[in-house]
Image (cartoon, rainbow, N blue to C red; front, side, top):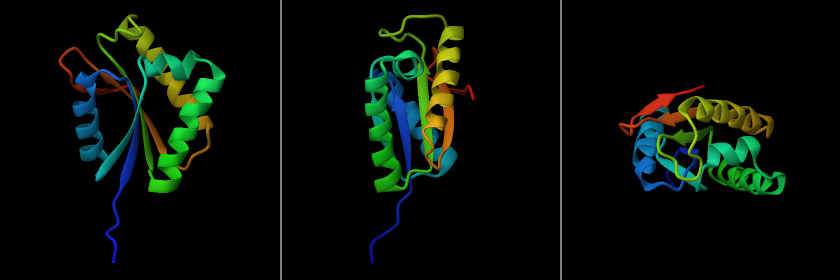
Length: 127
């Protein structure tokens, strides 16, 4: 018999400093065995304000995670010191909130959460 594993999905920046805290937080908070990670530089800005065709590609990737792996959690991440989106924390929070709303509109049966990784590389829940 094949073991059943639980998955979550992270829409995260490519910055290597944020991968570990995000993955660990998701695994601990949602008891996930694995985290499918979709990365792009400044992904919170891309989803909230990006090119529609590119955002549709991200939606397709999330769909693979949800449909093939049964992911029930989708996390959108912004972080301190983002080279691709060097804006103030408050603007990142707006982008994260906008991204969460957009991801929710995609209609996947999953919990959608927005996270901020602060200057100490710790997770803060935005929404």
